[in-house]
Image (tube, rainbow, N blue to C red; front, side, top):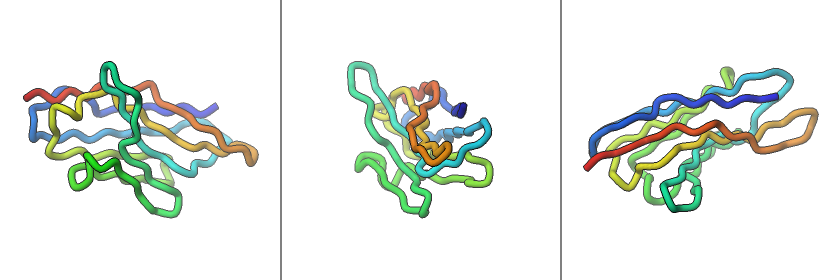
Length: 119
């Protein structure tokens, strides 16, 4: 079984920065895509950024130029550097991984980490 453990959330003032980290642990698996989603109160969970196994990235428009996703494939770890944070970035951020076990791919989620941006 694969576990995703996130860290790095917290409270920051508008214009500040935070770095989220998500590490996958377990055995007998590999990971294709890794990324981050977020869910604000009363809203649906939305994609923030994805990092594909071929190195390509995908960002939601509202974070382009402010957030950067990166991966350490050897350590099954994904990072999200968040700069110039805005109050509307406040949400619970969830790590996502497309995990391959015995040739079958399935989605796995972390427990979430709270990011709060004060104005």
